[in-house]
Image: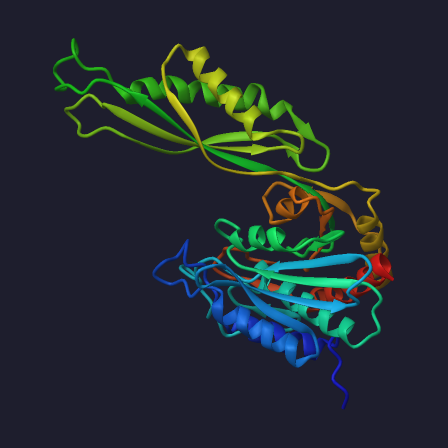
Length: 380
């Protein structure tokens, strides 16, 4: 029997092996995290066995990407991307690494987020490698998406492309936009004194309370009125707070961490200036600094990759896909920020970061077929 990379049994086999290879991100679960070394090596070797030129690239020590290339060296370059790391298995109520199959559902940690997608990308690359494909496809199976995205950042630093399809689960929708975020820290200073010395003590926590109330009002009255047609309103929330040294001591310092979710078109600099203005409006003094920022995504609906992907989805599924945006962040924005038009399409399922996680096998097979047809539409 001739092996067919896009057949359901073949896709299921590689999907199960991916799930059965633990790849918990060590940056978010240091006591459990195995990292991506074993799974990246498996993916690279599997691709090589199926006539796809593949190799490993070290994004950071012990954190490799699996990279592959299909097709001619000349012509348009299309990138298919999926991440290999997962969140922790803590709290799961199913065996995380057994890849159990029930009907069309394949269970296990990372099955939905996003080893189903990685399986689809690998199957598509193997299928394209068996054909005289006139364009060029780069496979980016990257590390660390669940924490700092060092894998995607390293990939776009070393590789160029004319377009990218990220394959985060999308329930068959065509995703053209997602929100970004800014993490900021605000620090207020007080004067430490014995709790009885109201005449000397100044509470940094009390100062921060005034700022928190102003931030909450700004979120409700201003940010929720800013909307994007695909991703909805801007928002922010006070995430973490720490301060004080004891019940009978005026707090000398208080630190508040804030997360701001940004819309396409908003910049980190704009966010920081708005936070400063809110603080100024309270009359309180505070220090503020940016901890981390990630850009939002916006892809032109008329871009060639969008048209190529839309037609491929219609051809495989018989349906015109819903065009949508999502509120969460993806590696897609890093590819777009590198000048690569990027969209997202992926399988269906449920349970990302949850106690029970599964991916729909039929949707993984469909995704693999869509990727192959997209490559032909874009590069052929």
